[in-house]
Every structure is written in structure tokens, then in C-alpha cells.
Length: 435
Ligand code: LRH
Ligand code: MN
Image 1 (cartoon, rainbow, N blue to C red):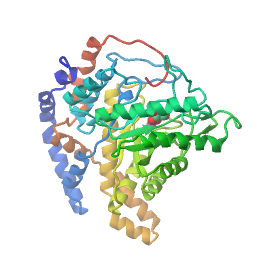
Image 2 (image 1 turned 180 degrees about the horizontal axis):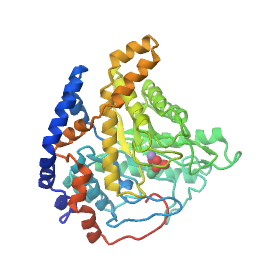
Image 3 (image 1 turned 60 degrees about the horizontal axis):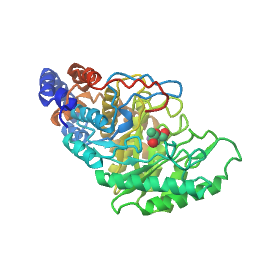
Image 4 (image 1 turned 90 degrees about the horizontal axis):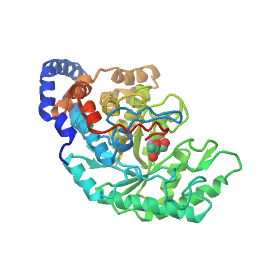
């Protein structure tokens, strides 16, 4: 795998040189924040260590330029294969230190050389998180169409094809070291009456049980619900209730995955998170942000307080000693107007920010205000943590992991994108869709 631009352009030395210029100011800011937190009984290094240990997976489909049904405006140096996608993912990991794993999507990341893919990832010091199946698109040579659904299709031949594809994804994932399958299906209806809502759900449970039975013992099935799109009247796994009932029906290896963009505007997602934690069935997240629909915008770019409130529920669950809260954190975004590498780096950092702020919540005091029904002071206690500028903690966590104090600045001065543009002839397909 010679000529890997990530190794060439984002060298440790370049990161050290860039950090050297910023280190003194960082240490000053860090010390000042440390003094402030000490006054509130918080040891800054304990927060920095927790942030440094926080990891989120990169969606392989996120490093290419995304688009909408109207258009896609590719940019220079787009990755043309899963191998080039891994190169870009390793740049994000080198500069943030927070994204050591990649979540693949099949058949988008199909390659006849799975062993080569594993070797490439090993060389780039990347691992693989949950694999994603795809029974929401037909591909050339496919015998059964998914036009009217996949795992819930009325025709058993279509369901069998979809089940076989998911089992194939598990097999590939197992070769790559993944430990989970994310199962999102677009199955549903566009017209009232088009589908028997109850029977469709029963077909889902029957099909998903066959996929569940194929899971290796140490794997998990992550069920992803979504309110609408591509179905615009009813979606079989439309909400957290449908997902939770399915997980509880399938078995102990089935969990619910919360994609932030899969809810109606203003839905209280942190409440859903709290309920799934209570049910011991919260399996992970697809982080992104949205203003209207499943916009797949950068995490924390529209409503950072909502992101904070979600992490606040996770930290509160830890504080209440909720057992076995092992979560798969993943980003799931579509980058239509920014450099995907930059957007994914800043999104990973926005998750770290929300996590760090959640660790600053004075939970004992908050608990007292809640017991006393002092609504205002309870709200203020949360807001105080949210309004604390934790930037020095985030940068220090990166520096201590050998990553960049200023990832975007270091990336831009590395010339990586321009080098990729020279190395990867433009794929000028202006088609629609996410990839
Ligand atoms: C569906 C979804 C799902 C992926 C796809 C790329 O909207 O969130 O997680 O398979 O996006
Ligand atoms: Mn998703």
C-alpha cells in the first residue's frame, strides 16, 4: 500500500510542528480552566482522560461528497474505492485521535479482496465498527427487486434474498473484526391501505429472527428506526417503540440504534435515550444534526444543546451505575457543501464537546434541586455545564493522544485534499443520492 497520501501528508512530524506553535497557549488556557473547575470540585485531568478515551466510528459513505435528489456536486480528490475511503478515514483519526474505527456499508464498500481490505486497515491503524446492510436499493443482476420492501416484502423470495444479504454482511464483517450488524430497512408504504401494518411487522420479526440466528455469539444486532423516507405514509420500523419491541422479541443480542435525524422535528430524543437505557436495549447512535427531515447535517451544527442533553442522559446513566452500557457511537452524515474530512473531524469533536460538558454537570446538586422541585436552579445547573468552554480540554485530549491541537488548520496546511485531487482523477458523476 505504498504511496498512501495519509502517511505522506499527515505525518506525525507535521502534527508535532503545528502543535508546537499552539502548545503554550493551550497549556495556559488549560490551566485557567483547571482552576475554574477545581473551584467546582472537578479535577480537569479526569475529564480530559475520559474525553481522550471517547471514540466514534466514521461512516465509510461519509467521506465521499453527498448529495440530494436534486444534485450532487463532487469535489476534487473524491475517494473512488473503499481503500481510498480508508485513507481519508485514517487522516481523520490521525488528526483527531477519536475515530479509530470505520463503519462499512455493503455493497457500497464491496471488494473482492476482503483480506486486502483488512491488511490495508491494519496498516492505517484502523479497525471496523458495525457493518451496514443495504436492502433499500436494487443492484445490477439482482433477481428480486426491493421496490415494495425487503425483509417485510409479501413475496418470500424477496425476503429470503434480503435475509441472505444480511447474513453475507455478517460473514464479511466477521472477517474484518466487526462485532455488530446495523439493520436499517426502508420498508413501508406510501398510501393508507397499501400495506397491512400488523402483517408487515410480523414478517419483519420472522425475517429478522433468521438474521439474528446467524449472529456470532459475541455480535450484536443494532436495529435502526426511522420515521419516514423512502416510505412516506408508514415505515415498518418507524419509531423506538417498534424497534424496542423487535429487540425484546429477537433476543438478548438485539439492541436499538438511535439515528438523531430519524425523528419528527422537536421530538425529545434524550427522553427516548433515557427509556432505551431503562430497557437495557440502547445499542448505539448514528450522530448527525437536522433542522427539518433526515438532513444528515454535521453533528452539533444545528442544535448543540440537544446533543448535550443526549450525552447528559448517558453520563447520568453512568452516574446512576446503570450496568453494561456498551454503546456503538457512529456518525452518519452526508456532506454536500463541505470537505467531508473536515466535517467528520469537527463532528467527532462536537461529540467530545457534548460529552465533556456532560461530565461537568454537578449531578449531586442537580439531584437536590430536582428533589426540591426547584425547576429554575435545576435547569441552570445543566446550562452552567453546557455553557462552559471546554475547548482546552478537547485540544489537550488530542495533543496527549499525539493528534492535532488544531485538526482543521493542520489538515488545510497539509495539502492533503490537493494531493488527492492530483492522485485521484475526478469522478464527475453529478448523480443524486448520498454516494
Ligand atoms: C438511513 C440511514 C441508515 C444508513 C443510511 C446511509 O437514512 O440513516 O443508517 O444505512 O442512512
Ligand atoms: Mn443512520
